[in-house]
Amino acid sequence: GTDYEVGKEVFRDQEEARRSSGDGTSHHMASAIGTVYHMAGVSHASRQESLAAFALDGYFPLYGTKASAQAASLRAGGNGQARSVGPISDLGHPARWTIPPHAQTYYMPLTAPVIYLGDFTAAFALDGYFPLYRSLAAAQKASTDSTAQSHGPGGTMGHPLSWSSGQHAVFYMPSAGHQQYFGNYRDAAAETNGDLYSNRLSASSVVGLGPLQA
Image (tube, rainbow, N blue to C red):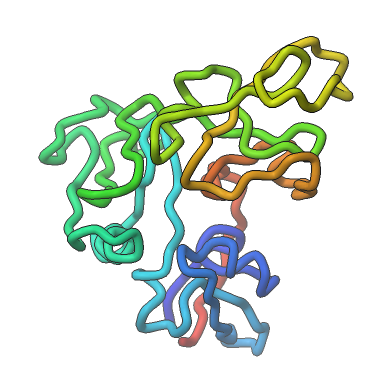
């Protein structure tokens, strides 16, 4: 058998597994004692190609394997090529990751709608508006046509007239390339730590799991 981590590689809930998948698919497997867990991908053989991207230290989209990054490139209409990222990679940066072992290598599609090399900023949701950014530049970079619109008191879109947080502030939303929500976004996870691509940024706080049988 192989050891997997609950909450990171395998999940107790099918929907969690699908959210961890880049293509929205999942499959199930059982541990040696018969407990059923769920994993990204339509099958165990193809799970590496189905993993969703994650962000780390401002780099996005990152993948744990080259096969995952290559598959993501193809899904986005790219050439299916990937490059390594990390202190000892061809890219040569960042000089050090903030999580152990600090010198690990990740992979990134060579072609993607948006590539972040240290400047990724997660979007957030507020009052059902998503994806929002605090700076115009961040929203423009996330937009596939490099344009953005503003929301809030005094914003170009004229709504909402106020925020429930009491902030008299204008926030920005990419104009193209992503699903926009104007008051009807109700994802509790995104309200607290959401991002444009539903990344799972909590790489820690996982519990060990005994061997699972594929």
